Length: 254
Ligand code: PEP
Image (cartoon, rainbow, N blue to C red):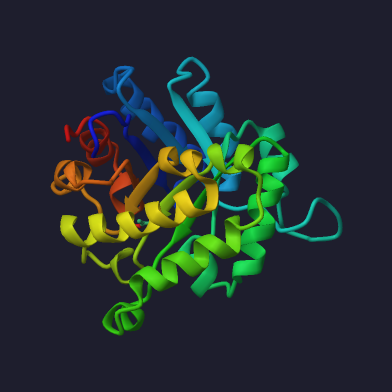
């Protein structure tokens, strides 16, 4: 991690931790995590645990909240979905867009990611755009091309003022939930390609957009990954579910 950047530690709880578990997790985590000026902590609880998480962090403005998804339309007859406006009203500041599970389990397209980024920005939510290659794409040497395609699809044509506030997460699909982590060198190489494209899309603003690494991060490898050049933070799934390991990740020193 470059010395001037303040790392972002983001927890994606996916479809885990209902309201009761979210409250218990946060009681345990917050009792031991003291506010730090040198990092940003963001939690992405499930939609139904969001209110419980919000209430648990009410006295902790240093612990921020986001939603795992929004729908790619402003409002209307979309049973079961949540909009950017609803997420904002519920207290979210961030939204995950293009997570590999949305892309590969639910079949979401680059075009839907683009729509979600636009809606998020229009409503004042920070989009955390996830990009990353599948194993066969990596083996075919297409890692950079896939990331660049996903970035362009979601960001091209957006005003610099919008892009300035975005966050990108490099999450190789083969590393998510598999226990197989990218090496710091692999992460740095992909982050460098992503950074080059962000500069191409947004000029100087593109140089400042945080790029997180995600994919089987745990308490044991967090510090090493945070130290990798170009890594501005971590997006963590499985290891963010236990307060002890999440605490260790949030206090890891690059
Ligand atoms: C994720 O879902 O964003 C993720 C990185 O998961 P895990 O840490 O479990 O690989």
